Image (cartoon, rainbow, N blue to C red; front, side, top):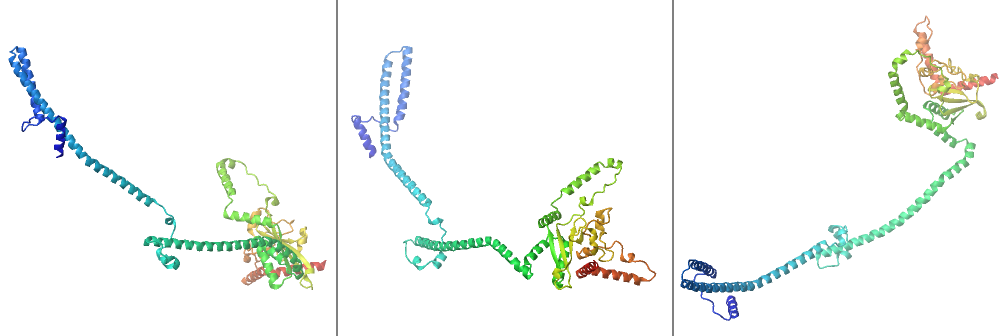
Length: 483
């Protein structure tokens, strides 16, 4: 019906002229093609007649046919234009629902993008509680108080539980803040107490020093001498092992048998500490520069060996033993005071004062009379036991260190007596076996066995502190009586 209306409208625009008759079965485009072909044939014929100069009557007939074909062409053109107008009208009528559908599609796409943005905004929304580590629901229902669990805060069950858990978290944090304030107050009190105690401890050494100084007269009056004893014990820890053995044996003799002797340790404690530290580094192998230099010297000797063989050997220059350090003494020494044990007040009758010192290079203990500068005054200690003048080094290692000079220096007041080595725990073998050293007699092995037994008995006596002190005391008394 729309097509009929469009065609009727078009007829009105063409002054209601009836459409040209259409040949059945032929479209306007076929009619246009046939008319065009016919016109071309007529024009060809007309040109041929003019060229051949035929009569004009034939041209009139051809002109008539030409006009008829023009009418047909116009009719076909009109039909084509009417068909085009009809198609345009149909297209316009079909375009309206398409535009409406397109508009609806655009509206739907806009609504879709709006909903997608809203969903994304909801998903990207960050609330405060996801960053809060809430307790699990089991602990919430178990530990939360009733005033938090019972009230309904939201119609949504999940949201209601979440709000309750948040309230429970807030309740716990408030309780923890209160507990934190209490702990801070307690911490502040403890810090004040610690500061006061540190202040007291910092002032304690001065108080102890003054107390120690004030107690010295009481200690001297009572004969305790506790402070002096502590100092002696601390200094004894820095003694070389042989002197420490001597010190410990004399102290044990004094405490066990109430021997009338006194012991003091004199010397530089700082130097002894430095020496002990040096020995510790030497034992652990810290200092290796000397060994390296020795290795370098050995290499130089190998490289220049032939030239040295050709040179004449020179006799080694004998250095001064004092300068070579063979008589190097340990910084600490032991002073032994021996008193008369037969008088009423032994402290007032001091018989002799001995000085024990240790020679580091020779590894021997030397004993001399304290305050004596003359070697002749050492007659009290000379031959205290048979064949022990103190001028002969007691063991082979010391003799090897000394070299050609096998005897000890007679000018020194302290000498390495054999009994002093025994007291210090330095044991050594004799140069010759006792059986070979004993004089040969025509008697059988009985004499030799007696000599060995007497030697062992003498050795055991020399190891006893009591025997040594008794002999020194008796000899000193005899010398005093002779004077």
